[in-house]
Image (cartoon, rainbow, N blue to C red; front, top):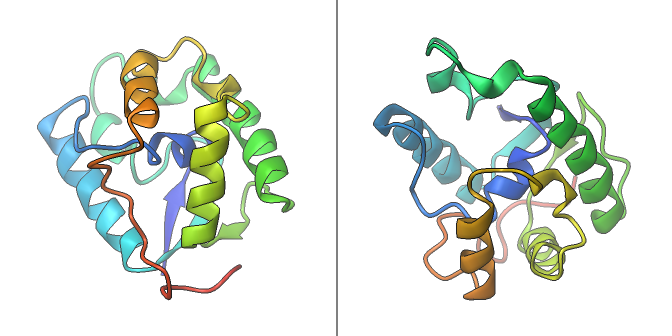
Length: 148
């Protein structure tokens, strides 16, 4: 099985601590992180994903906004470049410990943060990365999964 993830959420999950928009959102996100930590693969999707699901029925849900699709476009290009892979919608990605490390390093130095511009969580994510990603929920241990 795979987890559907939109490109900019590949960045969000790097600093995820268990905070979010609503209790249902956090509950769903925690379940997704547990699945990723167990080594489940990601299918890159265009538009709302498994993380968005609890938000989709809410008034004013931003998951379909042009600004969010813009974030996805920027994230897709930058994450693929940093990982040295051809990342595209419909593709499958496995987050190995090495890939998480590469992405977190690139997040910290700003080379994959273009998608984060204007995000309400920008400052919190910056504090988390500046603090060494302590207490982040995404923590695939070495030996789990294989490169995809």
